[in-house]
Length: 277
Ligand code: DGL
Image 1: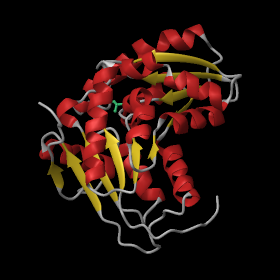
Image 2: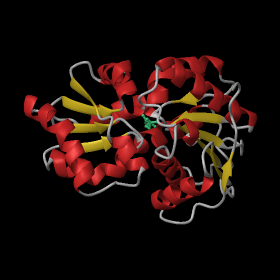
Image 3: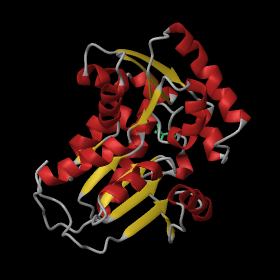
């Protein structure tokens, strides 16, 4: 992409239902060190995966309303479920450009596969939406895509269980039948914010012939391209300010954030975003 630079120092908003989107935030911070960020996790109402699509749309719209009130210049829906079920609605309503994680994830999977056979693992809501199957078909209509919902995994990650026999057995129970049904599968797309935190367990179950990819890296790349395309980068050498906010308890959020970043994350704000009771 071009090197067009803008001069908009306002933060990029990153939204997730909870802590999982910190994996996307972390990649954005690494890729775009001059950009300020504001992350919001709707921990009080997570998980979104098992919720009705209408509820996910309503909650996401409320969260986005709060983020827009904080004077952000761009919005990244880092939550796969929110992207899959609410992206068009949010794009129509928002006053700033909006990106999701499904298309970048699809691009990553299409780039990784050699056999043309891809498995997408995600929440029940994301699988039901068919958003990944559609986005991968758009990236390359020749690919064969199998989707698998893994509803037990988000609660395990939320409970801090990210390695060992419990997640490995759960992943094996979901994946083994899918991989046995199509031995040509060579790419596994982690279509949920929480699953990169279980990457080692997915890799152990999938084996060395399957590439495990996620949308964090390609989302940061797509964001950089978009900022350049619209001339909206922060000035070079900015001292980027990073805010973290949650609708849930700050201390629990802070602990997970420290695990994801590997360093203390700084203050975590507790915010109320509900428009109606
Ligand atoms: N953030 C959600 C996603 O990426 C996973 C957690 C949830 O179900 O809320 O789909």
